Image 1 (cartoon, rainbow, N blue to C red):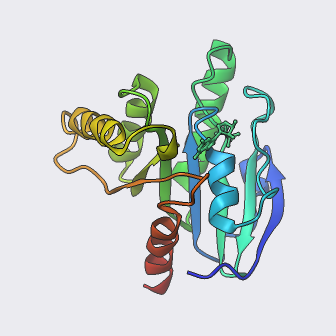
Image 2 (image 1 turned 60 degrees about the vertical axis):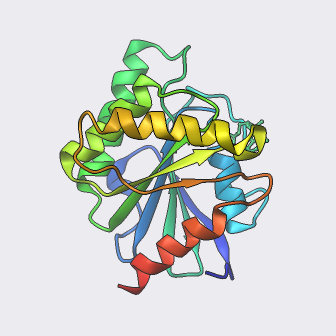
Length: 197
Ligand code: GDP
C-alpha cells in the first residue's frame, strides 16, 4: 500500500463521540512504551502524527487517523503502566471493552508486544480477551532493531507457545522496527488485503 495521505481526525474520551463507522478501521494497542506511536508514524511515514513518549497513565484517549481517505487507523490507550492505580486500570478496561465490543467497522486489532521481552501476563491476558470475544487480531513484535533476530524469534516462539495453552491456533505475527521500517509494508499489506475484500 502506498501512503498518499494520513491525517489526524479526532481524539475521544467517549465511545459515543467516535466518528461514524462508515469505513474500515484498524486499532493499535499495547503496553505503554511498547513503541506504538513510533510504529504509527513509521507506517504512515508521518513523523509527528502520533505523539511519542507521552506520559503514560494520563487521560485515556482514542485517536482516529484517516489514511488515504479510505480507512481509519486507531491509536488506543496503552495498558500495563506500573504506576497506574487500580481504579485507572479498571476504568481503562471498561473503556477499551466498550470500544472493542461495539465498534462495528473494526476489522482487526494489532496487538503490539516488545520483542525484547519474554511473555508478559498483561499482553497474554489482552490476547485472551480478544480471543474469547472472537475479535480478529494480529501480533506485532516491536523494536526488532534493538536485538538479534534470533533473540526476537525466541521470544516470539515463547509467546506463541503461551497462547497455545488457550487457543487451538495462534494469530499471525509480524516482527517490526520503527527505526528501519522493517515489517511496516507487511502490516500495510495485511490492511490492504482486508480493505479489498
Ligand atoms: P508508546 O508509548 O507505545 O507510544 O511508545 P513510543 O513510540 O513513544 O516509544 C517508546 C520509546 O521506544 C521511544 O523512546 C522510542 O524512540 C523507542 N522506540 C519505539 N519503537 C522503536 C523501534 O522500533 N526501535 C528503536 N530502537 N526504538 C524504538
